[in-house]
Image 1 (cartoon, rainbow, N blue to C red):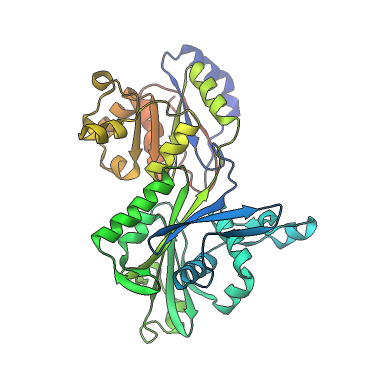
Image 2: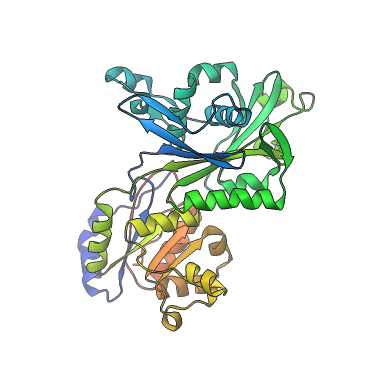
Length: 384
């Protein structure tokens, strides 16, 4: 499980370090539930090549939108949203309170799955649907793979369902469901998916991709699925279905708090599992990024982002993805954490977070962290 590194006995020693330190204090932030409210709601669907806005109403106890509930691709997307999940109703909590809306119901599970489950409940009974298509095998979501896989028997056939980071899901797909038909996933269609993902992520919304793969019943009989290991799941050759975006508004007091930290000489670094475009939008909403990023400047000037330098180009902000971070030497990471004073690290893993903390410590900075949850790094070693 996650480890904490709290040393109350060192308070006086740490105070002394703060007074003696000439370096900037760094404050590492985790996004979900720290900068944002952790109250996710389904916002938009993308399927059949088009956006479909969703509308939730606590007052009228409705959740509808711009979609045809009988359309085939939508039905497939709804099926994956309902079945591919580790979340469940918190029956005890729901019986203790007067619940007047599905949106108010308590769920045991992560915030993204809660949002999906509440939307699905308005379309059909989640529990009844799951009972009709029980889960036979599963690869739980983790911060490295960034996808969640389940296998269910659907209409007599074992079927693999996947949800996760759109780019990871797309890697495993060879076709796409368009108006109920399987169509080869061409480069043009991949670009369409990427464009829809960028449009939704650019609004600061978390985006999930969904896909499925019917399995050969003779190759995957029930007795094999009962004991299947993660390495034996057939992940490639899936059919991409669509995207769902989730909105999680920033906490009202966060922009002011970030500005106050900066005024006090505390540098705020955002570290998140969200994709770079979503992370950038949220960082701008909460004042972590207040100017053009090196990424935006590089795109505008048609140059490599690693050639953009704060002194030469007057750029103070940079967004670094987990994939970029994996290519960084410690020296390159140290250069980035020293040179850019507005930093966002996106699509990170727990190991990435430790790299970032240790880089800041190599600059003789004091590092604090906020946030929590199961996606936490190993505790960094102290400096003395």
